[in-house]
Image (cartoon, rainbow, N blue to C red):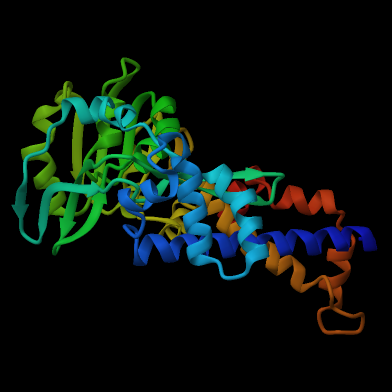
Length: 348
């Protein structure tokens, strides 16, 4: 690898660090004070001009959470302008599940069924990050200008799973791909199950769920409101054990895996399930927030690659260094591509 490529790698590493900084800023806001921005605050900034709502929210977040003025301008221009936007609540209120499946509050064991709310101008993750120029990752953050309620399951009073705009957006691609005999790992509130069962080209949806309270809440309070409950078959089983012990004896056309809350708890389970795909070689597997998980994995792999970049000959790692130096930047970028990583994780 020549010196020019090394310089490009340094810039990629710097961009990765900036990506992480942006995520850190947004996570701090969303986890600690998601309702810091209020309707009154936005009105003060915009003078009541709704067309300026997005600009006001972006500027407020940048100034409130970034102390360095130069960094504030950089992040606001390169990330917030492309990643923070006002959403239309009617788009989600008119979603088939929202319109047809009305939830009534219910308590079973330590689990309860009810509604959670986004207040006006409360920001939230609304989709997976988008990639610009391969290595700039822009988190997608949304807000409404009015109160928005959505169904949720609570465990010991804490929100455990919910059907938010983020879930709707990140499941859209998987729902479109679902066909034939479908199996889904993870029940939740049955959003994917409902939307898949509505498709004419889906004959059955088998759900693998091990939480008895979740199954009970769903079967008694949600499933009766489905248009095609006859298509739904629920099996109480551990997802990984089912793939290993049962999938070989069944024929499913499409499998949707949704067992995690986010990247932090999902990466390990994603890798484990990818390694289990060989138990069902005729089934097409699809994974919730796979793109986000792969982005997380690729930066870990990138750091590992760079560990060999600056080793000297004669070092105990010299062979590794030579192999790294024989790579071109294009080859490294290919190694870090989603298609490569999807297969790579099977051998970690």
